[in-house]
Length: 135
Length: 393
Image 1: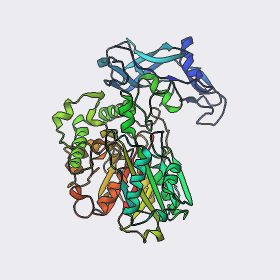
Image 2: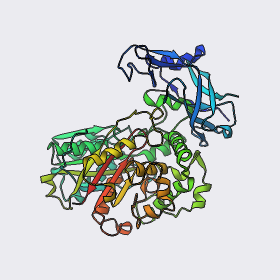
Image 3: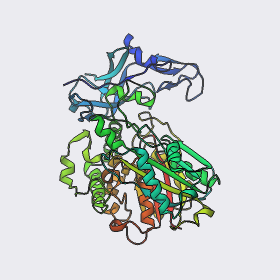
């Protein structure tokens, strides 16, 4: 059995902060320096005030599971063990969320409201943020 | 306040090509078959068509220029659309063009060989509109999902369904009711893919794809072609059928177009498109006789029932419980031809033809009784949503 199938992102000016911050152990989310709004996915301007003074900024790495699903379908030529895709919400701003994987636990242990913390899986030039239960 | 809509577009003919799981026919071939059938259905000829608009989300679907050139069309207006306010983007554009008087008879077309493409690729999921294999590196909105093994929109839909179940107590049995009713309808549709009855036991014991969604919660990819003739008011009188008025269209997008940042995962964009539809008409949800609601997944039918106001928020599970209310003889027949779940995945292009056949009284064994006069269409899911109201006036 192989691990979660991962198609990697093409890195560009806008998304590099998010996809490589983990190489330094940091989850970086785009933030507006003018009004402090967090912007995800990263964009060239702030959605709230339209300032272009936006930069990838470290967050705490904490999150709470909002929803999840256990994948049971074989998507590639290799069989995979069941894995969890989840949407987690970050405490830094209401509605600030990531689609991610919940790892380091049995899929059956995952539930909405679960407290999790980020760690990174490095693949080629990218650090993919995944989340483990806080025990 | 949204702008007041002009009401000057009519559906005057529909046509669908032969459809199947893997026909090994080119999309252009399927497009032409559907187009010719639609033109014939309207009682028009090729030379009456002066506009063409095509939905072409990927390489596996026919393009506007190749159809125009192959069929020798002479047009004053044409367009080609990617997915926008759902896959019916091209139909909305066609209505807009006719309403502006840019053409008299527009043919709106979509044909795809997704069934054959999937058969050739073997295992492999895809996000909306992609009928090809996975690229090496991913750009755009898919980069926020594919790196996490969310290989298909089913993962997002499964998470939305989980939220709806957690918040409102929606059950798998209720999702199963949608699948079973549509399968019953498909039994009466000779062009449907799956026509054998589906029992609750079969549904509940089916293999899971992404929990809580199982095999029967998902539509079946096929090859198909679909075409619609959209006519201007004065031109509509020249056609064979009773013109069906496009009462209203809704393409509103008032919220974040994001699969995971959207403010309410239990509604998604259908909320905006559904609510806005009723701002453009004096009709109310209670006036609707039949509804064609996007069923790429069973759960989306529940989303649309709430979004279009056929029931209160959170009540869609109870609305479909047992299936009677949405059956052919129920209060609100839904997806009367078996939908995408059983008649095949047509990227939203089966709904307008089926609605029109029902309004024309031409739906054969699956005809809804008592001469339905008004149809609502809710197309799309997730961040893509568009709605229409059709009436046989």
